[in-house]
Length: 406
Ligand code: C2E
Ligand code: MG
Ligand code: MG
Image 1 (tube, rainbow, N blue to C red):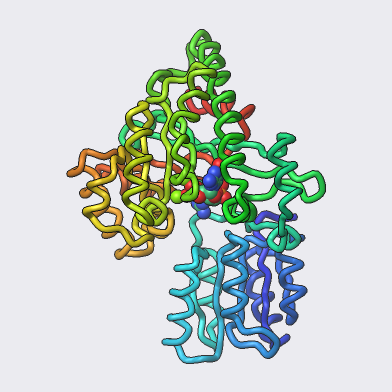
Image 2 (image 1 turned 90 degrees about the vertical axis):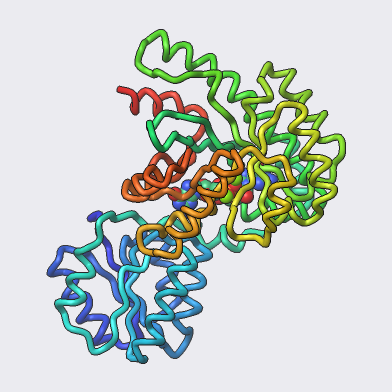
């Protein structure tokens, strides 16, 4: 397999062939299909790095295909083609980009080969398509199955590093849960965390997550001493943080703060190194209850972060009232910061807001060096994203640190 693969979906075989011909000229391997079903099969099996998509087709419209690609978190570079008017095409392109897809261009038919050629070659980074196999995106857990997963340690944690924008120094990790399913393999949290919330299983899930990630964090801290003695991983250990996501439902469990503090005590972790992340909407749902629980957590020494900031319906007053120590700028703004002036404006306003409230600001979803540079210029404190590192299994973290400091 070459590392550049173009998958074409177009109901007109001649156009498919023309695009293939142009793609070959710029050394892209390509496959053209007229069937959406075949298209999605190839998406999973063949992992294209590029996609050319006709917006108007008889069996399925391109907008549905776009929604499905977004749902699968497709990372391929996408070109939208069609014979419809350019305003509709532009709107479709914007909508797809807002879904988090990488749109490299919209082409109205008939198009000139050179325009297409430019689009296919002008991409600065080429990432393979990352999406869940189709079986997984349809995966539905059952209550007993998830109960068993929680009880029998099928929940496993991935850790994603956070760094200081200004210095590049490691600042901490976010713990992200996955389900290692005996039949289906690794399942991502969006496919089972909401289900756990709806079915009264979230408190068990949170406990499992906390216990596992704190256990890893303790051993990591010891491992780090090994790194230090080797003299090649200059990181200040006591300043390293571990972020854990808390579900909205958990904000109603009054004894949560005590429970969390007890687990820290057992594992010998300083609560000040632990950051609980709650989403903006969940924190604002019931500000009175939230204030109560969040204050207790703060009193135990934990730090609190407001996650996905910018997407919910927050009021400034509530943000000031609730005892947060960090704001996390939602990745939807950060991921397209380089393409969207609006996103850059949102980011710099949030950074200003955080600074004036004395909060640390983390940008998540940093996917390239230009964005990191932009964040640094804005005075954003911390950055997290695929450009720095993807979420990794615990056993790979020490190697990653050594690699970076080598
Ligand atoms: P979140 O807390 O906002 O976590 C960030 C998500 O963005 C993670 O997805 C992470 O893998 C992804 N991400 C990080 N950097 C980048 C980037 O540069 N580009 C892109 N496209 N994505 C990036 P993940 O692991 O699938 O988690 C999804 C959500 O599931 C989390 O969003 C969080 O709300 C929830 N979640 C994860 N673990 C837990 C948990 O232990 N408990 C609870 N209650 N929720 C969790
Ligand atoms: Mg989070
Ligand atoms: Mg987030």
